[in-house]
Length: 303
Image (cartoon, rainbow, N blue to C red; front, side):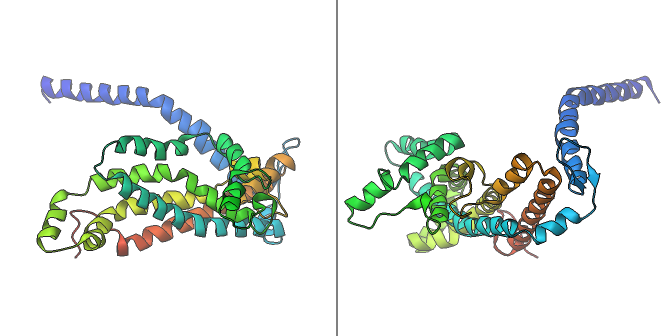
């Protein structure tokens, strides 16, 4: 080996060492603050642990108790209903608003900002705002219904309408999805629209055969993120209703929080957390598996 090769080898090792040193804080943080707590929670899920006494290993007992816990099934049912309705609504509404915000008109950037701002407001602030909007006596929602000569609702105080109120409230944050859709829309090659116009395609046909297929990767991303987010609703329920009335808004993560920090059943709460992880993972894999049938990637060639 000549001197030049030895020098290059030493430089490569030095660069690798420097890279590891720069990455060390991130890697240590990942191991200490993410990987270790995750693995520890898995162990705790097999124990009886209330913080004040050492964990006592009980095997699968926490998971068996979940099967017989009516509130566990209630929270899972409420969260599933919320997810099944709110996620498609957010996908469609976000896409529709993005189509409107993609128009070339004067002042469009102002409207984009207005639609996006609600998605960056603090969850607690948004929850308090909607508590006022849904107030059955002087809230804005009933004021508008009275103005339209429609019957008023009890909203959050009625078990029949409480969950629907949360679903309606979920549309408040469509600005986040709108921005992602808008980026996707602006990335659609213009020559595809020009070719469609030369073939005599109308607006609907351009949307159906050009816009929609090219946007499927973005729709796929928003669908996966929407499913994950919908199964982790906590702040709104905690601030607005605390799971009431009559457990009509007892979302899964809120019930998990109660078990952990109200009743100090850390083992039981950890078991719930891993069940939630399994549910979200299964749904994500299901969507990923189905994506081959409806998600189109530019440049991809089917064999």
